[in-house]
Image 1 (cartoon, helix red, strand yellow):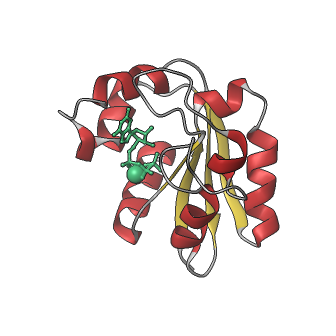
Image 2 (tube, helix red, strand yellow; image 1 turned 135 degrees about the horizontal axis):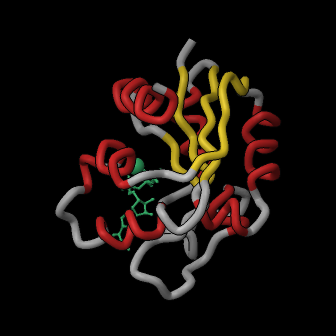
Length: 136
Ligand code: GTP
Ligand code: MG
């Protein structure tokens, strides 16, 4: 079955939303197949965000992702990649649709990075790559 890598980012963990977020993914019907609580490293983030290296938001993004622990999880199910991204909502939390995770719990906090609570893989290829980065 299709799998995706989901992260509850440091803002989500710090705000005590990890359980709520994971519960919403489970409630949509996807199966939790692996999970851990972990501090990211620069090495992990360089691999995870390789496509964004050199962009203006890259350094603030890395600093944000190093600012506290994350919850990394693997979920499984038919079309889970697009299903989770739909549930997460658009990248910018201020305008993400109500009813989505970012739309319901996120907003702009005035920093140089979008603190948008969650990450979800965007393709089958990136999901397999990201699962091996975070879970080996
Ligand atoms: P992820 O699921 O986290 O990958 O989100 P995404 O696919 O919606 O966004 P993308 O992969 O394009 O960017 C990765 C992360 O970088 C985002 O989740 C944001 O935290 C941050 N980011 C992306 N684009 C911008 C931007 O234009 N400005 C700022 N400040 N941050 C951004
Ligand atoms: Mg992305």
